[in-house]
Length: 508
Image 1 (cartoon, rainbow, N blue to C red):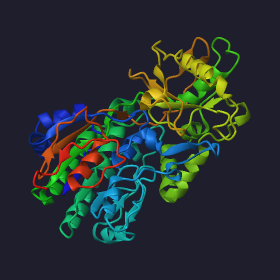
Image 2 (image 1 turned 30 degrees about the vertical axis):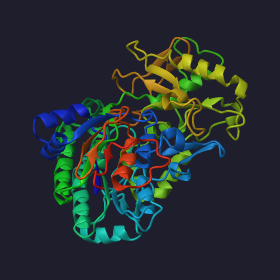
Image 3 (image 1 turned 90 degrees about the vertical axis):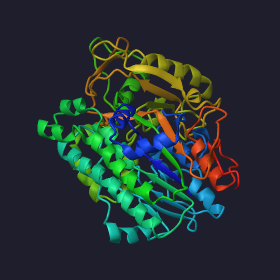
Image 4 (image 1 turned 60 degrees about the vertical axis):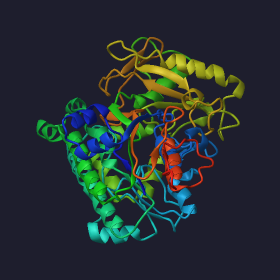
């Protein structure tokens, strides 16, 4: 057996401090027994691509998926990521070879194709319509486990100004979730044997987004009593994961090969993606505003998020079916755009900002001639770099072509054209921005409201049981995990982009 245990989206500073203080005993034991690798993360700016590449073992440019809501050029609109084809996850690959998997909460993943070799649950730790799509295989498996361990509760991760009430509920959910994972894994492993066990502790990931920086919560007006409650929430979430991992490790076979990994890191959120639509509109306007004049506001969805309280939107998300929530969010993205006069736009974006040209021949309603694309991209990049924060510091760190980010001469046609990396210097998300050329961009609310966002600090600890450690021929990469699983289990790895980091025992 090989077990993939994701202690996911870890803030390395907090994580290492807890290791040094001997507060993560099981994790420390794995690290002492195994080999630590910093992993190259494929295009971390395309945050959703990380998990599709991890699960499938193929690079982002080969699958084109990068965000829960993606631009469909043929329909000239945003659609949920599930609308697009996806690469085969490794548990489906090994099922075709007659191997069996038990999979719990693979982040941003879809229902496996195999009904024979995979037992899987998604949306088990909590109900999260965007990143934990609810499914189980074989169908009805979730009902079996729910009867024994209860139904998952709704996790209200709602963008906008942080609400103390919502955050208190979210804290409770992330602290409860690891025990649910340990319950279901120990129960399943006591009754069946599997070749692959893949468990993702999504709770630590979500805790990092919301409880990394309490200064932002204080600035949002969260009261002192609740701030005291939240002060240790991130550490508590890591402790809860550690306790659950200890229970899981206790039921794994003694000769199991173990990979403990974090597919990305977590650092302070300095994103200003909620202001990018207005910045882009200002750059593309032919006449610069007069001194002191304000440019237009942000996109329709960001304006709605700024207007409606997070508690109200969380209630709506909780009562609506998940599919309807996703469809409604996708519809609101870019609502009201006049494509006849839109040369470039911001598709749905996360911590990094994305810009895509409305290109003739690629977009259904494209107006930019391909011959003019290069000059327009240069104009946009120069213009965005002129924006400053109130203290005069640049808000944009860099504007890069997507081909540079994914390391390919020609990028996947679904990808945005430009990646905007924001300054890493922290500031309030409600600060306005200004440009000497384009005037002031007023605040558009609190943006996502998250205090932490993804970094590219992926890592893995490989603890061989029966397998042997291999010396990598290059710097280890996130796509190597799927290749490693195939190597250990003796499954064909044709078409994978990674290299194995473990090999079967010599006698195999």
